[in-house]
Length: 270
Ligand code: ACO
Ligand code: LMR
Image 1 (cartoon, helix red, strand yellow):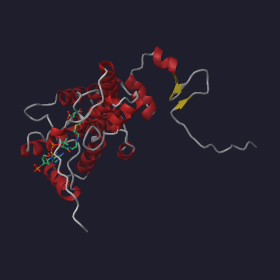
Image 2: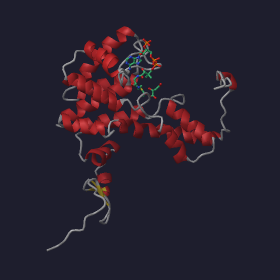
Image 3: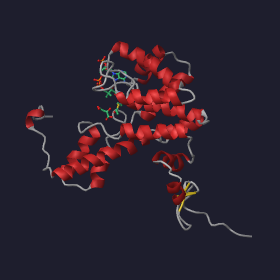
Image 4: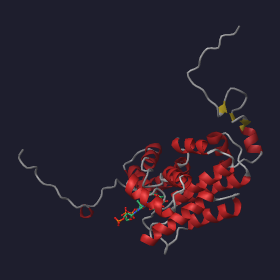
């Protein structure tokens, strides 16, 4: 009989061998003709699913609301400084993306993981806040913001919450996270459920509503699939800032001395 040669690679998302490439079995021309949105394409290539309209619209909203948050945030700053050092677009974009992590933009996976775990373990919000402080000994991912607070609410968070309340079949983890937020904002007004936290818990709710099991959702989080939404969305803004720098023909950036506390001493003799 036929002996199948083992292959070095396996691909389960796209196929370029025919007349035209397919995304999860759907030819690109069909994607275009049937007016698939960017969110629909994400559904096909990241999750191998054709999402229902309520989920696709949510993903579309996530990409839109995280696309940019001005020049001062870590990633945009890095991208701008790199552009002013004369580097190419790809290098500038990469330096921006490299700042995305547990403190900036990349707290989505962590928020999904810890809020989900806490709810599954039946921790009440006080217990959860205490657990993160005393056992995990780290800030709760998805809580806290440098400039947004209960007095200066984050519009993006309001938009996402309102959309989910009106369009998701249920929002159990969001509801839990909002109870946690009551505990943290009672301590300090900037300890709000931030945009990363809101996206994290709502993605868990979205996948639950789409029939994913807890284990399947944990696997997605473990793979970094939730942070990926911020990486993709914010790349739009980073590219904008890079093009802005090039357009403005800005010179090499050097940080001013008076904004650095120099505290350098000669080492003591050993
Ligand atoms: N959970 C519990 N306590 C917190 C948290 C948190 N997530 N964030 C801050 N605190 C507490 C700190 O322990 C500190 O308490 P203390 O005054 O008793 O020592 C106080 O709030 C101030 O902490 P700072 O680190 O100075 O707060 P800052 O305003 O600089 O931090 C930040 C903002 C970095 C967002 C922080 O809240 C944090 O690390 N949050 C978790 C990570 C996260 O969600 N990042 C995404 C932000 S949204 C985005 O980037 C798109
Ligand atoms: C962002 O989306 O980049 C912000 O929430 C972070 C910030 O400090 O503004």
